[in-house]
Image (cartoon, one colour):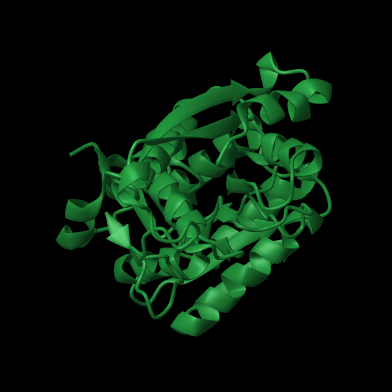
Length: 307
């Protein structure tokens, strides 16, 4: 598990207790507080975030406050009745998970009562802080990739939808002093030809989140072409690693919950990136493209395929 260096990635590490409530008197030690987790849908990642969130609150407020966690899924709630439901629950804080739940919560609930998690590009989506973003800083990914490709050339394909993601990757490559070649295309039909052109120039292709570019067919083409031409593919999640990408980066969802809870306790109204990341490796893909991976990288991976 890789923690982001404090000097380069902002994280909330203080354990400053009760800053929002002042000193708690002994007779108030049995306080029960309602906490609501508003979920965009029901998925395992959200369960892990909620678990970490609750665990951190219990740790910070140990001996002073007991928590009554209420889960609400968007599929089970009438948006028009949400404000009334929350008025009845009167939660101390609401953790929204995902963009749909966060949008609804920030529209319907009192300002300052909502803390979001797992939202991609919150500023561009009009999501107000505080909260934890979805993505991992490109600089953190490059920290790992430059250990694998010491003198490697990197490349990617992007569209109008992913220009900002490309710029962040470009800045990270510049900071590491490595070469990045990007090809912008206007429609998914241009993807195969752009891949063929790009793969002649690079050692490693880094996928960017872009639903306009990546369909099941385009991903299958990308992975097949990479293995055929000896170009490593950096996927978007462990599913891509299992399908043939060399490496994919992910987040520690439980720690995101803990980080979100501490952000709320500290009373900071800001956006934070996940402070811990992990990655998966496909040794079968590495052998196919004749790439020798550093032992320390293999040892650090949380999932290793083909070991």
